[in-house]
Image (tube, rainbow over all chains, first blue to last red; front, side):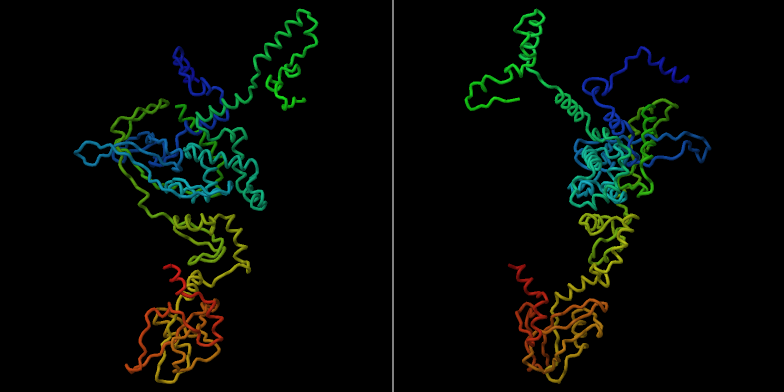
Length: 283
Length: 266
């Protein structure tokens, strides 16, 4: 408790920089997306390029000195292209090599070896030609299938938008009960039995918002808001306002008029009136 | 600090639904595994990790797992595969071959406990086509493709026996036991120059189960140089007549090598 109090005091008067979800369209995003984003971007991926030391303390064999173990992960970089590939947790490492004891360090990039291969999704009943690493294939093999690999691996290890998008599709397909396999009911049942257990970890809202990048999610929510709004022409608004005012003034003609413009005949355009072949809508 | 705590939290929640019963194997690394040459500075308890210095970005290669041999994977065959096994058999293959040539085309599935149970039934069923050995189909194709030259004596009287065929096979590099060779019912006797360069067939039984008809051609040979018939180059490509009319049906069923060759060249 004491440390908490100290912290809050420390933060007093310090400007808190607004985060991604505190301002603009980001603030409109649902909790389901925020959860995914936290899992995807703000969690340390599992160690692929280094072997983390186990335990809390290490004793020096020679001196007997005890030191804490703090695993500082190797910084990884993900290029733009990796979003359309499946790298299976691998990434690019930028660093230095010390090739000779007496020479200066040399910059070096450790880049994963990529190859084009095919992955097969049982749930979607589709084959995908994708660029993968050997690690991806061996992970698929050790997980006994691409679907198992996708569904079992958390977002911080899948990393690429392609993998996350596929995972969303698989989850959605499972949630809907595999409609693509309608013609083979036996296979459908078998696959549902096999993969249904993975659905327990997600709510349907979380599945809906899984695997979008931040900008994609923003565009999506913007579009959703736009769809919900119905644009009413101003002439209809002004007309209703005018009629209201006239009614307030107890003018008899206004009493018989409807507030809705569609019933007054304003809804039909002047062009429809002119067109001898155009039929008037009967509603 | 909050970042670390989040890490711990989310990993714990994930472990809840990661069922360990199904295929939780040790993590596989097929990539560069590096080590820092200079260890980063230790940070105080509760404070964020210290900023890395340039020299802490100097890495040493511990292992490049791409150069290491990867362990085999176990698969269960869903159909007969040449040189591997019958349906329902569990085989251990190299991972790349298994993935590209068995799993992706649907010839096999991963050897999970569920799949093992599922394909146990298939292994016991009789209506599937089964072969006596993984290489049986390969052998059948090889024998069907060949045209065996049976060379007999031009001077002494003979009746064709299985051991003649055995010797002819041996000349081509095939070791065929005598009891596996069945001759046609009609006896072939010689020397008879009417039979020279004519086709007949023998039946070879592989592992006492699969029967294959092999196309043969009779040639005569003499120790006397004058009587010796000149060798015909690529006799297997020529259109030849059957020795007897009875053989015609069987011989027409055996795919002929010459046809394939011609088709390819055209």
